[in-house]
Amino acid sequence: MMKRGSSDLKLLVVLTVFSAVSGLLLALVNDVTKDRIAMVKVIKQQKALLEVVEPFDTCETETLLNDPFDPVEAFTCKKAGAVTGIAVKISSRLLSAEEMKKLNLSDSLKQPQAYGDPIKMLVGFSPAGKISGISFLEHKETPGLGSNIEKKEFKANYAGAMVEGKKWSVKKDGGDVEQLTAATITSRAVTASVVKAIEIYKNKAKSLNIIK
Amino acid sequence: MLSSLLSIFIVSALFNNVIMAQFLGTCPFLGVSKSIETASGMGLAVIFVMVLANIITYFVQLLLIWAKVEYLQTLAFILVIAGLVQMVEIMLKKLSPGLYKSLGIYLPLITTNCAVLGIALLAIKKNYGLLESVVYSFATAFGFLVAIVLFAGIREQMKYSTIPRSMEGFPIALITTGIMALAFMGFAGFKLPF
Amino acid sequence: MSINFKNELYRGIVTENPIFRIVLGMCPTLATSTSAMNALGMGVSVIAVLTCSNMVISMLRNVIPDKVRIPAFIVVIATFVTVVDLLIAAFIPPLYEALGIFIPLIVVNCIILGRAEAYAAKNPVLPSIVDGIVMGIGFTLSLTMLGAMREFLSAGMIFGYAIAPFKHQFILMILAPGAFITLGLVLAGINFIQNKES
Image 1: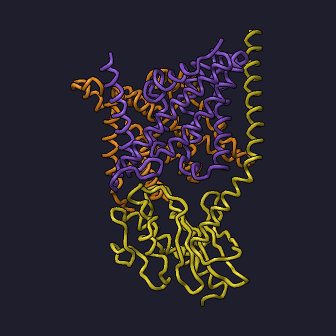
Image 2: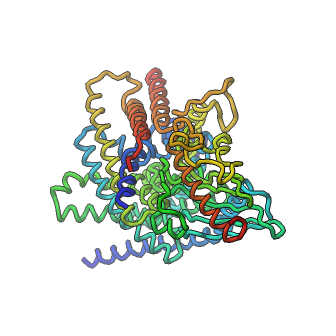
Image 3: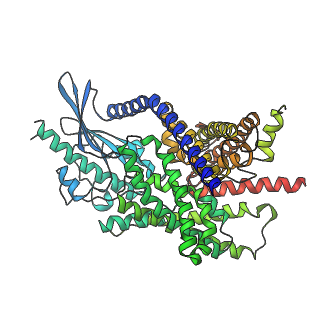
């Protein structure tokens, strides 16, 4: 009995020491890498912003919907004090009624879902109310089918169009967006997210007195 | 709310089947699928452990965030899962010898089933709440059960066919899985009514 | 004792090849062989984890009580996996995005626990390190080969360079069914050659 107790104690001590050493080592590595990991994220975002709005000096970030993995954000980009563009980061994630209210979006907006995880994107707008660009930050759609959203031809559905100039749904549903062959569901999810981005842009632009 | 849970269920059980589309848990899938009986035993054990693991790792993650040590996630999760499997084994042995007899031998194999750790990590990455995480893990494990039982059925039939010598064992099993995966891709064309 | 590295390498790549001979670690093999580059990245991560964990486990093999052997091994392996995960996130972000959760899943890669249990727990430090390196190389070569095959069949490219004389697209090969079928055919081919030899 005695012997068993002492050997159990030894097991416990060994495992505790193991975990402690491992925790220490990881804390060290985390310390070394964490700034760089944060920097990688910032650089990625900066690159995506440059892709969708006119050249800028600085961008102000406003978090509209806080979420550790998938926040909704608005960027107001300025050059020499003047607004050159507004970008909205949004995903095709299903937003709850409460979240929709927080974003000032109407409840009647449809939220069709993509196949894979929510498609994350950045939609850029010019002060004049034109979509200046769209960039997909993250998606898990089928390679070769849904992944064709990354193609220029599909992006041209949005980029360059006036916010009020198109009926924002896919042709199959009676709108003006050319859906991808064999990937209507993905096209629907993207289009619905762009609609949300447009609404958010309008609210933002109104608050900045760019549009009425 | 209900429709979003239902959509999580259908998507994770069929569209994104854990084996056929995500390759998680392929080792037990190929290893314990010689007969329908063992396959369904393994499938049930996976459902049991996966749901429990997701509930526990949900709280572990909260603890990690609270302590600001998210980088310990992998280490904490795998230890919790290994411990959980051991505990389930001991408790099952004491409380329900019958169930232990049918599931017991599969339990140790589950620790190294990458689907359990994978789904726990994915539920965190997808930012699911507790209820969603439970539905997600149940659906995924259910998808595993469906896939492994179907596969075992095919393998039982295959025993009576002549297979070229070079194709025996793993090669034919993998090619059969490939064809099944092709069939599962068909689910992706469905439009959910909600 | 001296180690014949050449013989050991032959063992890792041919006689005891983790993927083609022992058929271990299927999940990452199938999931990360979508392109030669992803496969190579995964393989190198596995070499790093396998070598380090083999080294540490072999060093501590007399300290670890037999009863808690497996949890202790898991702690060692998970630690190195997290180190690799953080380093890749910081220094090779594109690879980090391509491999996703398959980096943390190296923890449950049967090859690593398998080598710890079958080799490192019973052998001195130096041979264990060599075992980690050669087994890792065997895994990496086979994985990269599969990745290159699938990339070539699906898009006519290897490592992103167009090799095929004509342009084609065969999406199935990068999707799940292609993974299973390619690996199945490769294993059948190896069996075929082996059967002919004997």
